[in-house]
Length: 342
Ligand code: SP5
Ligand code: ZN
Image (cartoon, rainbow, N blue to C red; front, top):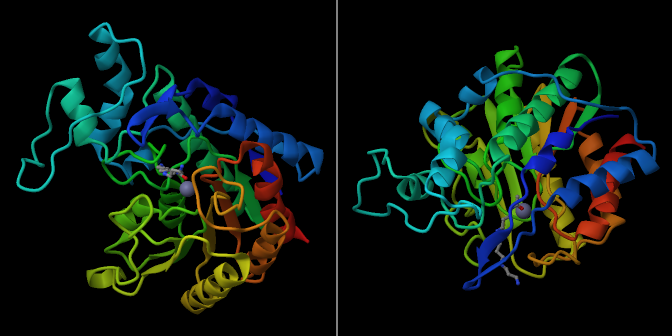
């Protein structure tokens, strides 16, 4: 399988994220993608190619123009004030505040376009997130061109980013941009299977009213886990999209057999939907050794995950999301891809 990768991800390197009352070193670091790339090369998964340039159009099919402009200009606005540390929000418009009026001041804009204080913006963030989207789109082109599968080694990840907000280390929703692109290029139905430990709230929000993109999430129960405010079992889509969002929340401590039962169920739903293309939001923070997560999958389990996804028999685009056990992230992510291919 072809891997798409861009070195430009390294331009996004936040220093700190807000956690447990402290600014702590970021978990989402450049080394993650480098380790995955090394593993891809070590096992000779296939050719590694760079991304093509798709411009803003496919991004603007998913994200609002105001939000994209914010991402493009946030660092310049921030540094104009003489600030040199990462840009992070500290105030948000919540219930009974004005959530419709886009503010001018950068601190207000950061809060307006985000839902957490753990997604730092740095001088190279826009360049990196745009290249990450191009990586996903280039891999989508591979699948559209007839490849059975392709791997978008995206960094920064994307599934927490919605139409007009960032969060959870995500800025542009790479999987959603690719899925929308595949729709626009003629695929009638696309399914997104999100196996990251965290609920893909951004992806769900983007496609919630729609029946043409099925969104299936396997994740830690938002009653106890980030992103907290979306991903409950009773969220099933709205209007024409009712029944086309599916959530499988699981408790902390979930082991592979119970997780796999949900994957089996999810795969049957996808089979019944009959998508022309499958997009997998591939997070491996379900791993037992993940420093911020509470599931207990082991490295060999990821081979089984790939095997099960392969049995759907759909052209499949894998888009990298989370995973913070950095030394094992290459083994775990590439095990899914090897399990798919065998
Ligand atoms: C793409 C992705 O996986 N984003 C995840 C963002 C998670 N950010 C919040 C993490 C909260 C961690 N709290 C648990 C502390 C364990 N000591
Ligand atoms: Zn995650």
